[in-house]
Image 1: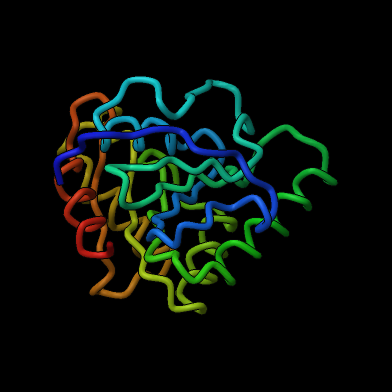
Image 2: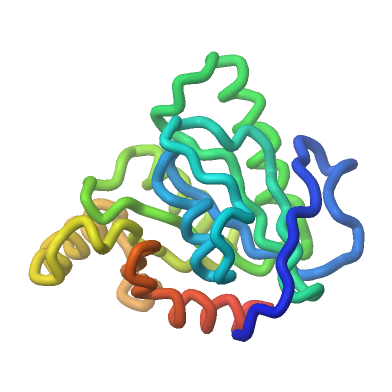
Length: 193
């Protein structure tokens, strides 16, 4: 995948606001502060298209990015430990569920897990939900640069066991610092769109 153009299109909280061109979409789901924006920026080779923040819960809308004029990345609000009111979390879950279950141009989800931490119940629920609805999923294990390569097998085994990943589940270790995993993610996206 050669990225020629990328631009932010819209922040949406309901399907009335979604882009209507019918272009394929790849969504990114993961806990708050897991590195969704950093992954988008690295995969499309832009420094600050998707806003990154050290503060959990910064993404509070579905953010649509048009890539090469022919597909969208859709950054979903993070789930988990974001310090926001319960009523806002409930709103998020409603529009995230609506988007994932009803968006017919959704071609896949990159489900992002931090390699340093055992997957949470929220991670497991999200993965099971994606499988229940038959949404093609790539598990991208971020922050690969934060541990040594020698620790990868142990951490990946814990993730696979805790999430009960089937043997054929695509999984890739990613680092926004080194670029590890970018080619594999781009290839998976290419296959979907």
